[in-house]
Amino acid sequence: LKNQKSHASKAKLAMQDQEAKQRLLQKQQAEKKRQLDLAHKQKLAKLAEQEKQKQQAAAQKKAQETKRLAEIAEQKQLQQDQYELHEARDVLIKHMEQFLLQPKGVSEQWQATLEIVLDKQGKVQNVKIVHSSGSALHDRTAVNTVYKAQPLPLPTNQRIKKQFMHFRLNVSPRWFSY
Image 1 (tube, rainbow, N blue to C red):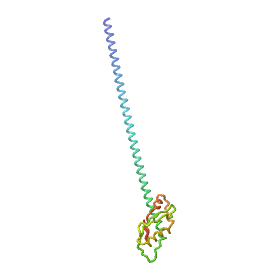
Image 2: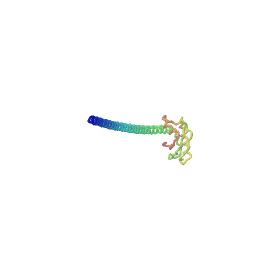
Image 3: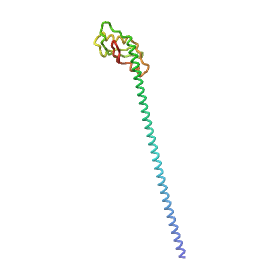
Image 4: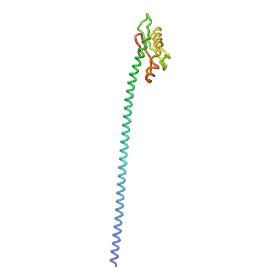
C-alpha cells in the first residue's frame, strides 16, 4: 500500500509537473504569438508609413510639375502678350502717323512726350504733356495729332487693351515711339 501511495504520489507529481510544463509551454507559445503579432503590426505600420511617404512624395512631385507647367504657360502667355503688345503699338503708331502734320516753316528737330488716357472705345479722354518739346507750337501739334487720330485702334486682347488705356507716347515729326 505504501508503494502504491508512493507510486500514486509520484504519478500525481509527474502529472502536476506535466501540467506545469504544459502551462509554461502555452505561455511561451502565447508570448511568441504575441511577439509575432506585434512584429507583424509593426511591419504593417512601417509599410503603411512608407506608402504614405511615397504618396506624399508623388503628390509633392506632381505639385512641383504642375507649378512648373503653370510657370511655363505663364511665360508663354507673357511672350505672346509682349508680341501682341508690340504689334498693337505698331498699328497705333502707323495710325497716328497718318494724322501728324508738321507746321510749315518750323524745325523738324523736336520731340514731345505725351501721357494719353483713352476710354474703352479708343476715344481720347485726356492728353498731358509730360516732356515739352520746348516749343508751344510743337507741343500743340503733338496734342492735336492725338485728338485728330481718334478713335485710336485698340487691341482685342483684354490684357493688352488695359495697357493701352493709359500710356506715354513720344511724338516727333518723323516718328512716334513708346
